[in-house]
Image: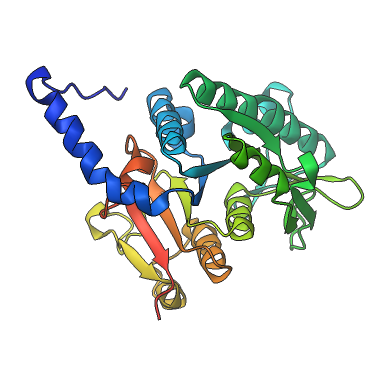
Length: 296
């Protein structure tokens, strides 16, 4: 369990004052800008990390940064499927979703996880409103064309930003569950990283932040000291050929690249195991992961 750092009383005022002064240029840079945070991994299941994430989001919102929180909920879905004696099946890292599983996905993401996150933000004196991709046709999708077939897994065809902007304009943090709706009313399970990238692009976000359980992109996956802090998206294909980008990092980085190509200023994969990693990313030059940029 992570412990709150104790600051000696004799210097706490000085430290707090200096922290605020140091953060000021970053707050000014992001003031009134939109940041999309994809929330997942350890930061979603570890209570201390969850509290840190919620307080980070409330703080950023209160200083004028427009935060959109996008979430999945894989472990909670798997747990509910197990309790209902429904088999969990994965193909290429994506959950095979039949009609029965789709019902569970919608129930868990939109009905349980989403409302729990809204409640957490409210408990931290934030204003939040829960949405799913079905609400206001926020996320429109079609069946993902893949071999082997993934069932009711969807790929996003359009994002209706109006419900998000209405929430932001009225001082609320939109908390978005990544289920989507097809033109015939069919509900689809959508990958949360992909959804976050599409939402960020549609909103013209300043920053897309993907929270993960790793330090970022490593030259040697077994050596955290080989972290690559910054990558130009033009380098990505070469890094794939070298095997530096491989496995589960490929779809995450592809989401970052797609977001940048569609107008998002910066996309970052951050280490969600680090307490207050969102604040460190936004309010410092160092960050806690790998940033993806387009620099020509």
